[in-house]
Structures are given as C-alpha cells and as structure tokens.
Length: 69
Image 1 (cartoon, helix red, strand yellow):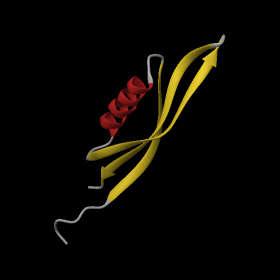
Image 2 (cartoon, helix red, strand yellow; image 1 turned 90 degrees about the horizontal axis):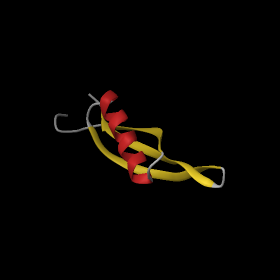
Image 3 (cartoon, helix red, strand yellow; image 1 turned 90 degrees about the vertical axis):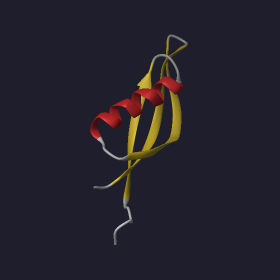
Image 4 (cartoon, one colour; image 1 turned 120 degrees about the horizontal axis):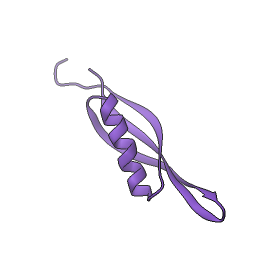
C-alpha cells in the first residue's frame, strides 16, 4: 500500500488582539511547532470578544489537517 496516506483533523482555537488573519497565523505557528505533516487549515468559526464596548480579541476555530506517520 505504498503511496497511500491517512490524514487526521484536529481542532484548535487561537486568538489575537490584532485581527482574524493574525489569529490564523498564531494558530498555524503553534500547530506547526507541535504537528508534523500539516497539509492544510480550515477556518471553521470566527468570533470576537468585547470589553468596554470595543473589540478586545479576535478568535478563530481552526481545523488542522495533517498526514499521519
């Protein structure tokens, strides 16, 4: 069965005080420091937290797809 792969999907939540894009970058950087063989990400959800009537943080829920060894 050489040439076949099996992938796994895991969910992570990341946040940033700057933007949704930055939250995705933060999440990807953290996932890449732990997981090998990442082949893709999918943004599942976007949320913001509000404090004193202002956006405090941007949060993203990500699916991280990676190939199993």
